[in-house]
Structure formats: structure tokens, C-alpha cells
Image (cartoon, helix red, strand yellow):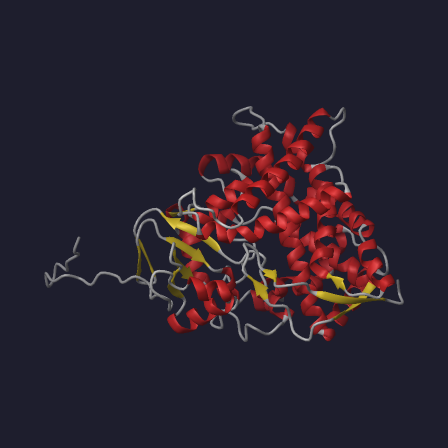
Length: 464
């Protein structure tokens, strides 16, 4: 419908679609995006500005690279932007209708029931268990020093975080064989999610590479989670785990408990968030530290002064301020969650560009974190950016590795605490040096993963 000015009775200009990133006929930018995704996205922003269309052949995304644009979609007008699209449909195969993907009244009910598990008092009670589980996992690093061989940071942190997360989540550890199997399946599932999103509109009968393995991996992960739920239900005495509390919790309004399916979805959601994202954040942090020896020395000085050789407690975390800033800066440059897609329910405009109903709109966390109009010299590693004084001058969504608005990750404080404790114990015991001269390059995955192993050498510190 044409819109007219009542003063001149002439048609008003209709808003244009966002400019399109360069691409090829039929396949769009898909080949370039698959080959070098993050360089391509950065170059597209430099060419087109903070909002542009990414044509991937089988689907199109509108990419947002500024915190004000993300704020519009994720907070101010979130009712018009919902979690539909190929990526969310693929994620639902893993997480069901868990807190990350559910919406509406059901999401609100689940959030209300789960929120108390992440209150400060509850987190304080988990800190000691996290520290103990981390110490028990130190043999992974000790084996590397004894063999004088480099350690694969991601593989090691994945094993450590899995041990750390399973105790407060399940109330029990997992066997070594289960940990190895779950780690392998989870790694493949997270790598496949983007491929699943890009091919979700294709017919089911097409033989998509990896699709069958993806379904089999999810079935195996489901079996592990349902087995743990069954064991908790049959336990003569409930554990002090998050699962036990969720299992016995009653909704104050409905008087209902969670079903096994609902418990599965929530447990799988927290497991992925607490395991996958934290291990990646720590891996990238270690990679940065091995290339920033002055920063590493300052982190170790802070840890030594605050802890004095003992294990960190919840009360110590506030004193490990610089350690936290190092983690935050690492998650700015290499945010484990690097994109937040939504689907427009009704026609809209963003910064004067038309957003037709049904459009997939992606708040690009990676783009916001690397935007020179948001962060000065954005490619430089500078933990001081996260001092209270400097962050007070930033837009609230300038740093958003945990999302934004009412849908911000409920486990944000849990994840930061987990990463602080693990990093503090590691740096308390070892000085790290990198094997590669350059920082690791990222690969295309649902999470921001390094391409290949991040290898580090560990030297025991004399004060341990």
C-alpha cells in the first residue's frame, strides 16, 4: 500500500531493504561465508554499514552490528522478534523446549521455577564444589608437565568443565568413558548446528552430510540425561543438586511438577551452557594470555595476593577483579555465543530499512564486539576496558556474550564464577607458554571454536 503525505498528496518513499553483501547467483555469499565466515562478516560491515543482508542461497539473514540495533530487537520490541528460524529449529532437536528456546507463558513459568537456583546464596554454596572438582581434574594438566608435551587447551578444559558442571547439576560425577563419549558427541552436535540451520528449508529426503550422525549423537546424549534423571528419582535420599531441586519443585500457581521431558530439556540446556561455553571461554583466554605475558603476570600476582596459595572461595571472587576482566575481554573478542537470530512477526523498520515479516534478523554478537564505533581499537586485547569507569560509558549491549533483555542467560553469574575458579586454580599452579606464534583462528560452528588445537606448555610455579 502506498503511503501519502496529506500536505502534497504525493507518494512517500517506501523504506528500502538493507544493502546486500556481495555474493554469487543462486548461492549468494554462501561459499565465501563458509570458507572465512568471520572475516567475511567484518568486511561486509565495513562495506555496507552496521545493517546488511546476508544472502546464503537457501536462506537470507539481516545482520545487525550495533548495540542500539540489538537493543531494538532483543529488548525494546522483543514481542515482534521471536525464536523462529532454521537455527532455532535445529537447536530444539538438542534442547527440546528448554529455557533457551521456549517462549511465552511456558517460558515464564519455567524461568520463575528455575530462577531461585541461580540466586547469590545458591551460587555461594556451589563455589567450593567447583573448586574441589577442578583440583580433582588437575591430573589432566599434571600429565602434560610430566610428559613434557604440550597440552590441548580445549580438550583439557572440556574435560575439566564437564567434571565441574556435573556435580552441582547432577549431584554425581560421570565415568571417564561417559565423559569421553559425551564430549565427542557434544562437539559434533555443536559443529553441525549451523549446517542444520542452513539446510533446514531443504526436503527431509535429501541426504544432508552429517544429518544422520547428528540425530544419533542427540539420541546418545538423551539416553545419558534420562538415565541420570531416572537415578535421581529412585535415589532414597535426594541429592543437593540442581536436578534434585528441579525434580521436586512445585509451581506455586499450578501445583504441578516438571515432567521428565521438561527436566530433560532444562538439564540439557544447562549442561550445554555450563560445559561448552565455559570451556571455550577458558580456551580463548589461555590463548590470549600466552601471547600477553604481562597480562598473565598481573593475573598471577592478583591470584597470589588474594588467595595466598589456598583454593578460591565464593568470597574471594570479588577480589579477583582483574582475572574477571581478562575473562570478559576474552569473551568480547571470542564470544562463545556469537549470533542471536530472531524472526520478525510483523513488518518493521530498523534504522530506516524495511524488515518484512518472516525475515531472520541476527543480532551479531561478534560484529558488535568487533565494531570500531563501539569499541576503540577493537582487535587489541585490553582487559582494562572492563573497569567500572570505562564500562559506565558503554552501551548496555556493547558486551553481550550472554544475550540481552529478559532472555539474558539465567546462568551468566554461574558461568563467570565457574570460569574464574578454574582459571584461578590453573594459573595458581602453572605458567603457560603457547606453541603457536599466532592466535588460533576460529572455525564456523554454532559456538566460537578454534580451528585446530590450541597447544600450550605448562611450567609448574615454584610457589605451589
